[in-house]
Length: 90
Image (cartoon, rainbow, N blue to C red; front, side):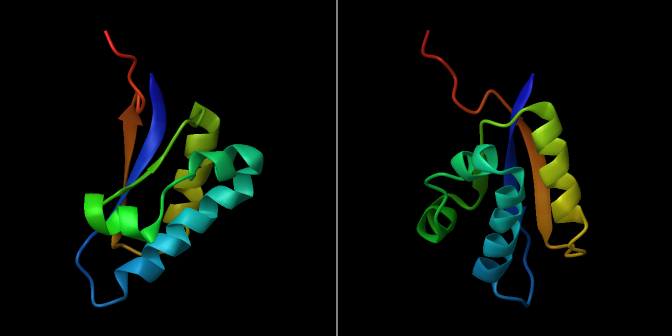
């Protein structure tokens, strides 16, 4: 069960924070679900962790975001579906 999306930026000569912002804005097109999925995913968090986490998303929402990001045509933006981004404590 995939419930989220991890976005990384590979080494490039373009500004990494601009690419992160470009990828993060694609979630806005999902409406309220996309806006809540990118909550707390700031530039500072990206610089600290090295990736963005868009979660929770349904399977169709995740596919839409992945399609929009791939249509940007920027090879430096890497996407990875993630399982259970907020695991329950056992």
